[in-house]
Every structure is written in C-alpha cells, then in structure tokens.
Length: 418
Image (cartoon, rainbow, N blue to C red):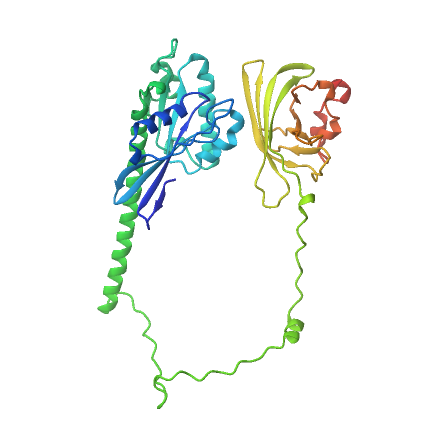
C-alpha cells in the first residue's frame, strides 16, 4: 500500500488505471499531464507497441500538498489491455492504493469490460487484496460515440449496486478526466489520513505509558525493580589507571585444524552451459476439437521465480472458441522430468479446476527462431499456427511419466489424430 517515509516526512501513493485495451487509460494520463503545471508534474513515460499504445505503464508523480505534516505524492500507472500481458498487470497492481476502471461504452466492448473487471478481481486476490477494500471509481468513457451505451446501462452491467462512484467521460476531449482523478485521490487521502492518525495516536499512547512508568518508579510506586548493581572500588594507587593487559594465547593452526570437525562442502554450481533452459515467448495456436478447428488461442510462457532452480514456468492460455466463447487457463507449470537442451520438454499444470493440461515445448531448430508449444486441455488440442493436426506429437510425449491410469485413459489414441 502507501509508502510512508517518516525520516523525510513523505507519503507516496499509487493509483492504477485498469480496463480493456484501447478503452482510454493512456489518454486519461496524457490529459492529466497536459493540464498540470510543470512544477507539479513529472515526466510522462509511454511505451508503444503495434497492438496497443501502452505495453508496461505510464508513470506520473504529482505533488498534492501535505497531510498531517507529510508531503504527499501520487504515482499514476496504466496496465496493458492485452490478455497475454497479464503478468505485467499483476506487477503493476502490487502495492496499489486506488484504482480507476476505465470502461469502453461501445456495445461490442461490453464483453471485454466484464472480462477485464473479472481479471482485476482475480489479480488482486493473488496479493490478498479485495477490490471492495480499495478506493476505486468507474469511468464510462467514449460516451460521445454514436450508439454508445447509456450511463444507466453501463452502471447496470458493471456497478449494479451503485455503491462505487462513477463518472461519465470523453477522455479524448478531457471531459470527466479531472473529476475522476479528484474522486479517487480524495478517497485515498481520506483513508491515509485515518491511518496516519491511528499511528500518531498509538505513538502518543506508548509515550504516555512510558512516562507514567518512569514517574512511578521515581516516586517508589508501581512495579518494583531490582536495585542497581554495586560498584567495586579500585585498589589504592590504581584509581583511573587501566587494567593490565593479559598476555595473548597463541593458537597453533595445525592443532586447530585437527580439532575442527570435518564439514561437508556444497557441490560446486553447475556451469552456465548446463543450466536448465528458461523460456519466455508468446505463440498463436489453432484449437482443435477432435479433427475440427473451432478457434484460436494465445499461449504465453515465461519463467517463474523458483528457489530450487528446477526450471518452473508460468503459462497463460487465452482461448477464443467458435468466435465468441472466451476461456482462460493459467498457472505454474513444473517439468515432469529434467529439461535437456535439444530435447522436448514436458510441462504439467496440475490442480487447475480439476484438470491437468499438458504442454510440450520444442526448442527452436535454428538461430533466431522461437520455441513451439503443443498443448492439450481436456478434449481440446492447441497446435501452433501454421501446423496441421497430423503433426501432433506422439501421445507418450505428452502424457507425463508416472501419470495415474485415469489420466492416460483420457488421452485419444494416436490413430485418431491422423
């Protein structure tokens, strides 16, 4: 949450603009940055990509006066809208103090609004946060477009209880941008003021308790303590003189080595050439049900921080089936065996909604090429774009060694794949 530095008397708050792709998050920050005086704004950093204007975040610190003697600063961030950048969304949400959910008012974007809102709840839950406990506001953007949903319809779909403040906005014209920031910033400051007052009251109470204890001890009341130690007087002629130095005892190194127990040395670290490969790539795949292609999927694989260095990975799979059904599968994937360079690696996502998706990663065949991922999710098969179903690997490559019989029984025989 908010970073409070008592030494510099400074509070740094973090507000994140969340929402689907191209909903107007970056435009909000650009309008805020343009409308602030140079003395109260920092540098606006924007990273553009071909798919969307913001890949990582926009950073904007703002001075907002003092609270209880503390100088306050706000840092405004946006998150990428694409689902295969979900790891970046989680990183930006860490330590969030306030959230602005920018929703697209176009009718065909409502599904993406709901999906992004569900994703917000899910990512906050991984940090132990709850959206209801964080100051947040809804902004219904792009209300100027023809055919846009009315604010009443947007409220009914995204904020049915009406408990969360909502603002009508046209970010491209600056309408509702400042009001949105004012509402969420005020809510964050109210929460911070309460926290600082609680800390101040607790510190004052502790100081009063310590003062009362000292006064009681001085007057002989309250709890009794042990008398102070008696000091021994130095012999005559030695007042103020330093004690004679004791002769140092010489240590024989050979004798010390003989008495020291033998310790087991840790094995030396493996050379860099034999370390487990760590993959990070994004791949577009076709989704097959039996032999029928029913949609496409975007698979994103990235390394996961693992203390034992076994090469675990994090896999996100976003499926779009029949053109309108959306499914998401994500989770850590552990290798079923040692990952050897030049060989296929089998990764297993276990304990995910009762299913165990299997992923087979093929190393690149040459320099400058990306790995390929084959994935089985229940009865669905994810094949790299451009590959036919006949190129599907042998089932023994996908079924992990030592798998229970029921897991192997659910696999389709190889003859059915041809």
